[in-house]
Amino acid sequence: MERCLACEAEGSPPPDPSTLLGTLARQALIAEAELTPKPGLVDRRGSGAHTDLSLALMRRSAFAIEPFIRLMAFQSMNEPPSPRLRETLAATGRAAERAMLDATNGSNTHKGAIWTLGLLAAAAAGRDELPTTPSLRRDDRPLIRGRDNATRKLNANDIAKTASIIASFEDPYGSAPNALSHGQIVAQKFGVPGARGEAVSGFPHIIEVGLPMLRVRRSAGAPEPIARLDALLAIMARLTDTCLLYRGGRSALETAQQGAAAAMSAGGAGTSRGREELFALDQRLLQLGVSPGGSADLLAGTLFLDTIERQQTHIRPSEIHERDLTPITLHQSRLLVLAP
Image (spheres, rainbow, N blue to C red):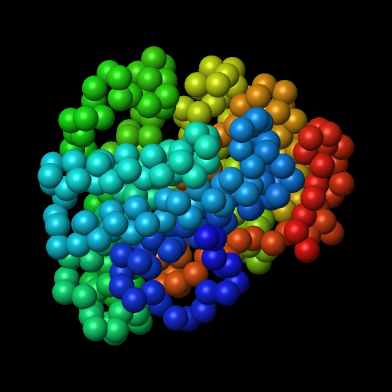
């Protein structure tokens, strides 16, 4: 049964690091799904360019995935990156995919996110002996990998680097032709990095694009939903998103990249002109029947690492109110319905 996020006690860390990482992964997935308005993606307005997805389904999927992310973190404790660890994590990831499909009646809600968040959680999992009462205070022993020795702060860059080492090992099962995902097929067809290339490179669209944009917007005083939307747009503008390539080819990818870049050049989601560009992009993606699912997965990874690095234990979904948005003529299936 889904738990109410608001009912989880803030400031009360889960009983162990793997549980904490699983919880943060689930919260990152829900926060990404609920962020509104996103171009072409499921959000609080509706199903975007998808015919088989909904916000309720995305939430259900996140809860189904959580135990497996927790297990991947647990499996990585005291384990350096190695082919054996890679194979173990891959098996758990496939179990997560089966649980996702069971929970969603066959809809692929988060296959890419399982890869991204599973790797990041595994990379973050602590190798040291667990403290009796774990917390994220700076004076505790390392709770997860990637802690900067000088500042004692958890370091997103180092976590991403560890994830890249894990991803660099081959998964024997995953390399079989009949086991290739849509993203892998598209990556081979178009000669693009794909999800594995992103991971092997150390998640550059999280570390060099998403996180910096999130920080810049926050430091400028932008509301959290605006900072997250601009992080998504920045990722979209630069990522070779295999979800877009699979559904619409290069023309769909170029439409998304150019539209996201135009929204950012116009000032981003926090400005009237930027929102006009955002909604125009939303309409174009709806007409093409495509959505930037890869960018959404990396936004979830951005929120996950951001929360770890800031030594927080909770990710709340963004709440954006109608007064914060300039009314724009929308596609009828995307009428703006915001939670109170």
